[in-house]
Length: 339
Image (tube, rainbow, N blue to C red; front, side, top):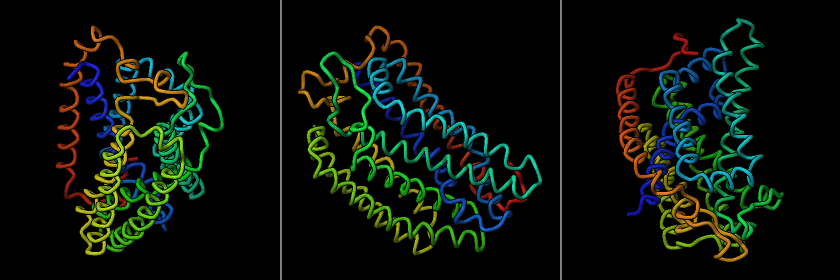
């Protein structure tokens, strides 16, 4: 394995950690209006992620750091070509974090409802932006031979991109509903697991539509370098959603939560692995595309930093596991305010 490939694996592991941990928070924000029918219910739903929220943010900061340090050419090209999507993602992160902390800073019901709505809106922007970015990566982009990726509406807004953005929202909402079912009790937990069952079916429909639109799009077909891998991972997503629905109907939220994680990871892996050995596929031919080696930093830089990051990944995973074990039996009632 080359240093470029090793660094790519570490970055992928970091992003997987982000999807599994922060995916719960994004999903909680998305389903807040559905489950939070009263102020007390909204407090309980938000408090499910209270012990984990700040720790979850570490993963995306680490991913950004790894991209800047390990893949400067790829990061710079992608950021310039998809700047509105990344700006929307960053704005959503800022607004959502502020909304969690400001929501309980004033007793006014209007104040609290306003910030709860801001949580949902920001979570929606984050989920849609991530789906749109994933769809853009799975396109043969107008990447010129000189390495410039023009910012055009054809890159940012495509039928495949819209389908993937909506499916991304459903995937995250499913994870949030399954997580809420494991961290609440009584009628709120029952509503959460019922919502998870509904979302598995909607997510399955969204995934099927996205896959079908992708098959019909010439730029998407041209970008896929590993079609067998993509087909297998698409099958994993479908099976995981079906089994997740079975567990949701049987009121087994922990197993449904685990399957929702499989859905997110398999979908992300299809985007990442399906383009290899390219990071960016160009519609102008293979010579204009960006391979992993071409988008990475020099091995002289990657080699020493690799071992630092290699220690960091299991450490972060261990801390997240410890936090999960610490609050494994805790149930949010809204009486204890983390935010």
